[in-house]
Image (cartoon, rainbow, N blue to C red):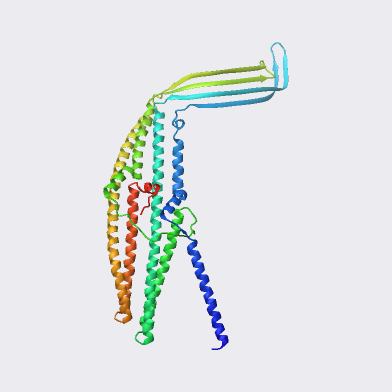
Length: 456
């Protein structure tokens, strides 16, 4: 080999090493540039930035602002008004005694100012019912906000652990790719020594490409899950981050505790109860139409007029007034009676809806707990299956090297391992989602987050 060839080879190797070092550095930088996103941090970010939570928070603030004596009608109203008028007229006047007045450009000035106080002191108790209605609406706003928080947190948890699952699936497929690459090497070695066939080698490469294709598909799912989580967190969908690498499930949930808590704290049930209370108040509001209304009134007036033509040069009036006004609608075409009847029917409707909601919550909690229990059992079973599948693959690799196992049998063993790992990850994920659903249904999810208690 000539010196030129040696130098060329060394140059090629140096350039190759440079590319490898640069690629490794970029990969290292990319990995460590990504922030570690814990579930707690994700939930806290969602509480600050999530769009649904922000909307619900605004609606709750509106209901809180509306709760005031003035909105209910307890406070008086005070109106002020003022008018300034200036007119220029040409006046021609003829009297019976023959006198004539002809005045051009006569100026007239008018100044009026007034204050008017009106205070409803009795309206058939409507203002008291309205204040109670505003209180219930405030409670409904708070419950709706809590429900929006629960839904958002539940979605964040689901998407967060979906990312964890997808990352683990990718690791599983990587190991499967490594097994397929080992199978290709074994097939190549056998072909080199004359004990193998090109068919086995080609089939091994086909299976390797199949694993690589599966990896690309799962990688796309992971990217989509990361985008979904960023959207839930209300931040740039392209933001990169790392998550935890395990799914840990709380195995100590009790069905009686979950059901008892749900009957007291479930948001959907609390909203149904508030709707029932609002229906009762609406009946009181309708009945107020049967009673008279009494208003106190008071006012202050200032009037000043000046004219350059006419009988009166100036006129000044200053004074105040006060009084009581009573009104009573004796017949309104039976509108009040109809409103009372409809309000009574609406009470019955909301009672029925409340009973239906209670039974539905009971059914959903029990069903979710059964799914939770089944998922925990599946986790245990699939964990045992995974251990057996791993042992079988180790044995299969050695037998493939020795030639006592066909490539097809090896591929089947490899697939069983992949399927077993995927089923275990799916069972863990489903158990975590069932756990989250139970906490949400029982009204305990927000409490755990606010108390900084890890959900796992």
